[in-house]
Length: 329
Figure (cartoon, rainbow, N blue to C red):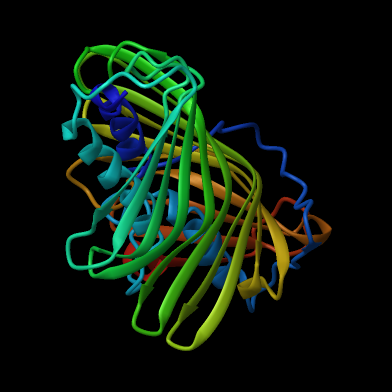
């Protein structure tokens, strides 16, 4: 099984590098979960910033969403990625386990702490197959200057080809975060929830990944300020083709930054950026709130984004401001 866990690692690497989803049509989503937030001239820029950052724990700091926090959300996914990448090198030629048997071992983390690994090779063939699972439990494990605790597990539902080694491949499974915590000093972030993952490559620099979650929650403390974000019925995907990263999303965000209210998020025009740029040059997102109110975010270029407000939901955006991408993300 350890020989081909690189397949999962490559897939999780993609997760940590971008996200998006079905662009959908121009019909605004219903905010759904929680109490819909009224979008006004007083809050529309802040709502845009909060919504665009909502998927940060799915995205790496070098990708679409760039986090400036000491404890950035992407570290939780990168942790899983890093540990999966290390597994193939360990005792790949070890004894074959009984069908359905688990193997458990503990290893030290660089910088302190430990990691407990439980492998379940469902058919005992030492290869990654549907039904195989892997559970990683961090015990004060030092990672990227932070201390991690909690659990991340992966269960496979489909695998074809060999990601990272064959030109064409696909992998599908479920990632489960159980109180997976990253802490740096007094700053702390905890993730809980399940994500379905589908990733594939068709040769060369042509890869895609899709994530979906019915409910995924992150609780954070930064600079003494506590916050909570929950994504509900949220779909996100990434297409990497010809050195261009295309991302989109669709779902509902409930956030303490919105007074525990909700907004629906969708990208009628997916965001796209060249691999050598930090921010999207094209793309549009729409946030829908109470009484049909909407905020529209449009990339003008790789440096500037326009944020517009339709407070009364009549389809006319009566307020607008241009902001540097770096002010929003």
